[in-house]
Image (cartoon, rainbow, N blue to C red; front, top):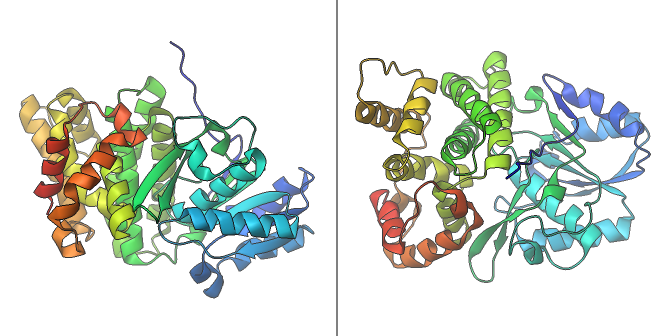
Length: 383
């Protein structure tokens, strides 16, 4: 069976990378952008970094700034309406995963029709390429700026679902570490733990390949060595750059190897309780890893080594436990080791969320298949 590897054809990376975007766009004969972002990024003036670059290259734009932290189907519908009314011919997302996921939904449905939900009942269901999409990333976590994934919330039934489509890949991705310097401490922590989760889940995925393995292991190394530093000092440019590369490598890994139960379960917490996705991943990662390590312990030995643990004198079991303890320790150091009950999660919703997690597309590549009761018990262990 052959493997396919998806990633953007062009990625601009490093400090002030956004200043190269206008020249890239000018060569593509695009006229008017729908900028998809959130109101906070507009209010603090960060979006002006993008709009100034567009103006300098005579590119027109209109801004949709209604994106919510857990992007909804309505966000996509509202963006589609503005896209049509403004006659924009391409889409630029500006922000973190929420902006990118919303923009992907807008660009895909604009070109293919229907409703975003129509593309969630399998993988790679769209028939035509989406409208040209450019992603400008301001967080080091989701990697949605370069992946084939988008996560959307259906507010009517409290579900959150992934859409996986090869046409989501942007024509240009921008990772400018200078845009990340102003990230609040807690957002830096949660997005960083999200990136670590991507790398770990991709490495133990049943769809892993040597390319995704190499990306995941290097991502783990970069994230573990730099996340605490950048949380404690957001102005640490070297750590910001390292996290930027770490989250991108993790995206390369999971966009092609997919994910597992951490994400399947975190999606449900986001859908029902509107919780931060990165925080939910941070809370669940060690516990799901404990469950998976019974199936692929050798993979967690590799993860331990990538986290800087000297496993030479350890048994396999000791090395696995050391990796799990290191994940929890990092989460505690950066302030994301919390309990679900403290976030308002109640036991009466666990079975509902567990069933939806098992139905989530990310569960297909988890290395160890679970029963409904086992998923409920993982939730309970973090209550």
